[in-house]
Length: 344
Image 1: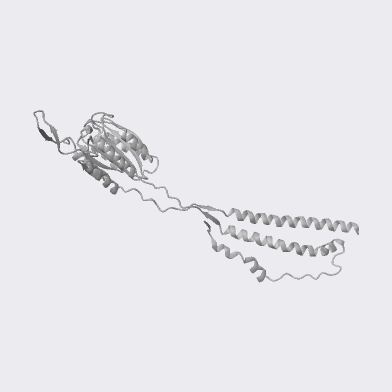
Image 2: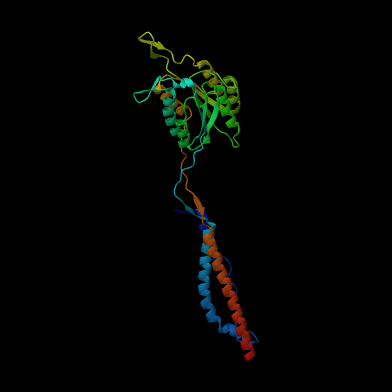
């Protein structure tokens, strides 16, 4: 689509006509029979009819040049197709526990019993897919904490590396404090404005390893503006076979330190959630979506390309043509005058 940035400039188009009408007319020279004492003057008189013919096309060229000049001043533009504005989302880190206790099979997925990590992978993968526009990072922790994926817009890579994780990869114990500290360090190392910073930490136990205590790590997170959502995962009741026959009920989440996880979330402005089954875990991640909504795509915009230089170049070309024609005519008249004077 074509448009003019300043269409009101077109009001200047009739300006030469107004100037011609408003200014006083130039004095009409009465040509005497003996105007000049040389044959050059008679050559000018003889060339008058030809000059009048030239004046006609020169006026048309000048008129077109003026119109092109005014058009260039109006700034013609070509408006392209609408394109989406890139969404600037938040930095979202996922920290997933890979300690030995995540092997407990107290979750169901597709009507079959699975371990906690398998259920976490399935639910977290769907969560990652919904986070369009966010930069997502992945931290895996057990006895140690590892940055598996730095902050990236490539959600597919995050999902693949999450699915490839396995229990015991980072050790059998649980270093919650180190996982939080690693997330804080990655946020602190960002050169640009970090903007919204979120950490979703999932674990099924208590801090049993690492160099930094969880609450101390939470203080560091609070200082850099990292909001932490903690998720305690694990069923509260599980039927297991007894050695003497029959079955007995146990609490497979007896080691879960809910008090510390709640305190971490409160200190950083987040929330603590308890996931007792797969459906509950799905609901928690959907709730996180609501608490940290994905940035809505902004209204698309149309790229604008300014084309004023095209009519401007045309106006300059026509003006140069008029100047060249005047120079050639002056040279021709001078030569004609010189020849006639020599003949006389």
